[in-house]
Length: 72
Image (cartoon, helix red, strand yellow):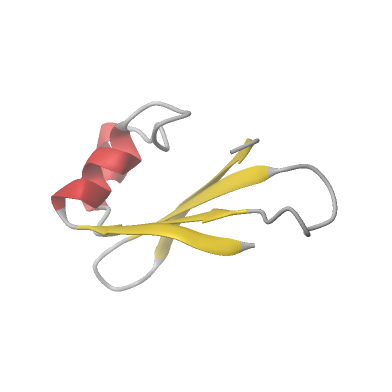
């Protein structure tokens, strides 16, 4: 698994609120608290199915949500 992207501030909130597969699809109350989103993806060498994982954090670095999507 490797980091694909990292968003902060307004871009992170937009990613948190945008519906899958382009974002996390979080409710407005949760997405409004989001200050960072990190997107990870599986590598071809990773065992199992391909996936994309998005993790949202608040301004204190506390994890708010994790969303995993099949594929890239």
